[in-house]
Length: 395
Image: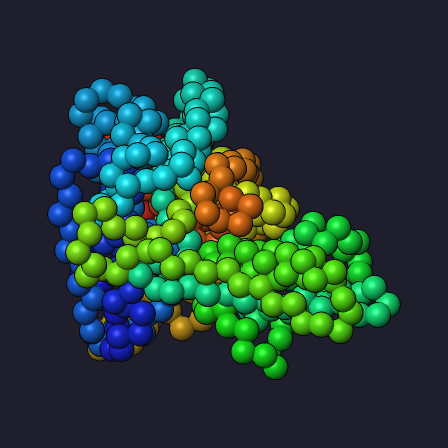
């Protein structure tokens, strides 16, 4: 893999690191050899994007599986089902997968009937299956802290330092406190605390719900042990300190503490080639707030379809962008979005609070590969670049 990082390193190295680590997708390979290099160029500055390297890597991997499926005469769903990772199997960079990996097969199971029905109806259907870590992993010491405080009037303050950017972390914080303290949600005030050095790390990598819920639950436990006295700051901490550095000399390294999985179907109209329906089954470990979870997945499918079908940011020979307006980026408009059916799968993650895995990162990892497979059913052409060439349908 060669990654164009633009003129600055930025997060290029980490993107390629994740791409290499996720190159096998959610499958078991007997032989795997991956080299990933981030390079500086005079093209545009690059940064983080939902999926963070897993999208690019697994677009390739999913294409390989579909090509192999065609050669041996089975469909894409069956090829994935036969090779999907399971608990106890060695995955990718050498990690032995835990019980949380059951979610990969469960996502496939969830889309099996819609896949069969759409094909029986004469639709062109592509299936994609993805894996993406939550948290930072790779030996990073991850610590999140939160504070719970009780007022004399019975109100409860929950203080954390996560960035709320539309993902609903405040709502999750209130839900956890209401559950652990057995109080009404209306009595809880959630505050982003900039006065204490609580520490949480980055609001990236599906970490908000995972790390935040663990810290708030721990703070509530501390409060309950001390009778929830008013005017006292009860601090809780959740930490992940069991992943391995890339250079650790161990036979079975723990690359990441948590992984999310997703299976998506792209169902296309055989006459027009348009994606007319999406089925998205996502394993989130535990859906703390199902509505927020569904919103994350619907938004991710929108991103994924744009990434797969229309969006691009080309540069000229001097590295200058040629798309200079938001409109020219060809982001899919709301009126052009197909309906998205969301299926929430909950395969609990060991050692995670409430079994949480997170949903932010995994959302569009399988999308492009699924669209490419559906397009192949329409015109028989294999596609290797994004955005995908539209299908050439002949009457």
